[in-house]
Image (cartoon, rainbow, N blue to C red; front, top):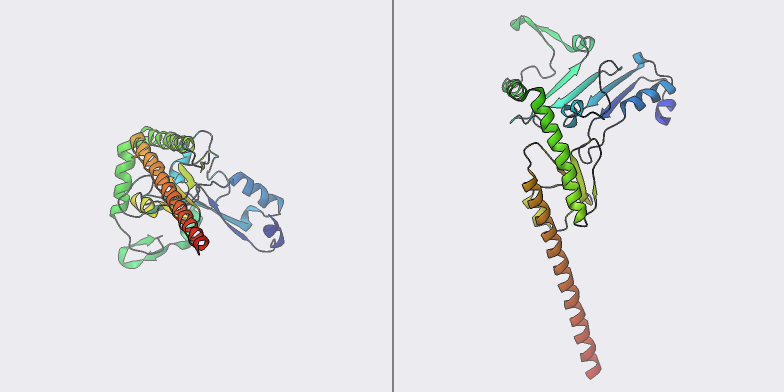
Amino acid sequence: KARLAANNSRPAIINVNIGTTVKGAVDDLDRVLDILTETGYTEDRFYIHCDGALFGMMMPFIKQAPMVTFRKPIGSVSVSGHKFVGAPVPCGVTITRMRYVMALSSDVEYLNSRDATIMGSRNGHAPIYLWYTLTLKGYEGIRQDVERCMRNAHILKVMLEQCGIKTMLNDLSNTVVFERPREEAFVRKWQLACEGDIAHVVVMPNITIDKLEEFVQDYVNSRARVSIAAAKRIASEARAAEASEGSDAEC
């Protein structure tokens, strides 16, 4: 808010996160719009992009989630096709207002059409994958996937906490954040994404409760191995110190 007020003479471009990469945080779009109004920005002086790479596909199926809609003065929304939808190739969809599409598009004479993409040529398989998955599952199938993800994320959080592991789970997220495992072999085995002293698990539709139980049990065993190794090291150091003291006393 302070930076908007300090730069009120300039237009604003704002990225609103719908699920951050590490912690799954969701920005409050309505609060952002209120702040823009409070700092004197009219709708023609700001552009808002909503980045919904993962959670953008899930949010419409969660009752308590805030509404992200073009009825509000946003400029665009993007979602990934290879994350929640599960396309086998990296891809994404950006939805924007027609006036922005027209500003970017250009006539391509040899195609006898207009092109609105940034790169021009693109993978033609990606939209087929998206169409197939959306058609196969339908609204109800996707809703059930979202419900399963959210439920299993909560179950994982509870399981970890019951084992004495500190966790964090946003109400609007399927990303469970917890203490970074100290055993690197465990991190590599489960291909955990780590940042600083935390790691996370993104609970997707294909993850079963059995798989979550296996993960938690393995994590508990990993912590035990680390603790036992630390105890043995301390004991070994103590014995060495004791032996050294005894040797000095004999001298």
